[in-house]
Length: 328
Image (cartoon, rainbow, N blue to C red; front, side, top):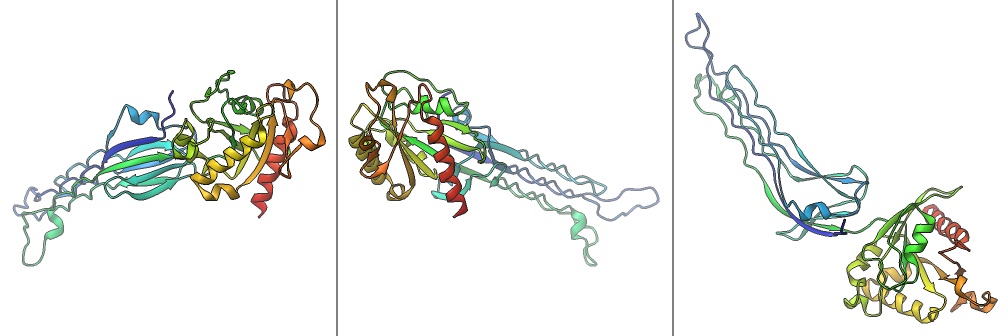
C-alpha cells in the first residue's frame, strides 16, 4: 500500500425529513385535530481517528461521502426515522481543513477522537405543532433543513515519540526492524525507504513508545531536494530525535547537514531533545576510541543495527529521555 499523507474529499450530510400534514380521522370524530408527525434528523458526517490506520490511501479511490437523509413524518404523530451518521476513519495525527476557507477544523490525535465535519439537517415539525386557538386545523408543516456539503483537505502528520533521522542508507530501516515489529524494506542502496515506517518499542521498566523511520534526507531537503521535503513534516510532531549516522561516511559533516535542514524547515526542531548514534561499527577494522565517541562535545552511541551491537543501550537512552520529558 502506498503512503499517502494528503487527500481532498467532499462530504455531504443528510437532509432533514419533512414534517407531515395530517388530521385525525376516527369513527365518531368527524373533525379530528392535526396529528402530523415530525421528520427525522439527517445523518451527520463524522471523522474519527483510528489507531489502526497509517495512511490516507483509501481516499485515493473514494472522494465523495454522503450520510443518509432523515425520513418524513407521518400521520398519527409518527416521527420519521433519523438518517444514519456516516463515520469516516482516518489515521491518528490527521488535520482536517475546510478547503474553501482554508480553515483548520480539527486535529485528530487521540484514538476515537471525533469531528463532526457536516452536521445533518434537522427534521421539520409536523402540523400538530402549529395548532392554536385561532388556527385549529393548520395545513402546513416545516420542511426538513437542507443538507450541508463541504470540501475538506486532510493532511496527515505522523504521531511518534521518536524520529530516526539520517542520510540515505544510514541504516534507519534496519534499526527500526531490530527494535520493533516493523518490517520495512531494507537494501544496500540509497532511498530504500520511500515511505515513513512506524514501530512500537517495548522495554522493561518503561512505557512502550512509537518510533518513526523518516525517509532519508539530503542537503537541500528543506527546499525540496530529494525525498526529504515530502516527509520532513512528519518530524514536526515527534518529541525526540535520533540522528543516525554512518560511521564510515563523515559523520560530523552528516550531522551538520541534517541539523541545518531540520532548522531550515522548522526552527523549533533545532531545540528538540536528541541523541546521536554512529551505525555500522561492524564494518570498522578497529573499535572506536574515546575521542571518536563524541561529536562536537556530544556523546554518541556506537551501534550495529544489523547485528544488534549497542542497540539495547540506545533504546534505553531513548526511553529514559522520553520519561524525563514526561516528568517535566
